[in-house]
Image 1: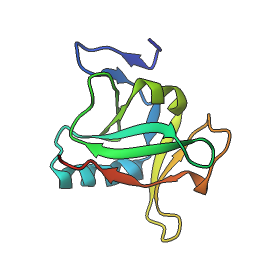
Image 2: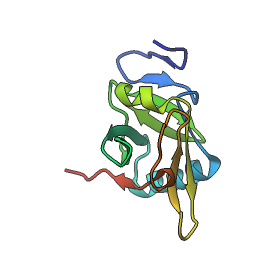
Image 3: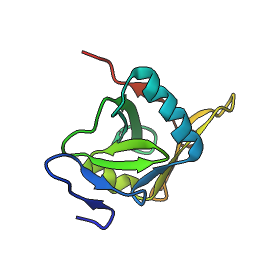
Length: 130
């Protein structure tokens, strides 16, 4: 286990902002989105998946809580949930939010990325209740 995580019981591991952190703007915006969804213990689930112009892309969604194997990070009042496989690619990343008309939305700045597409802009989607 790395120095940026530690286990607490059977639930998710607790991580630090060394893994991934939110800017103040992203934290503020996400707090409002989670509150609107009624996700009192909710989190921003962040994953790195195959695809995109560089071979990998970011996937984000609002979830009611972290999965049991996820790493849970608290940043600017918001929980970020990351699966262990994605954590390898996200280490040191920051998620920002901008309301800019042309370049607005969530943006991931990842020091590990060798190539970026669309300036790292990612759209977050809400998890659909099934």
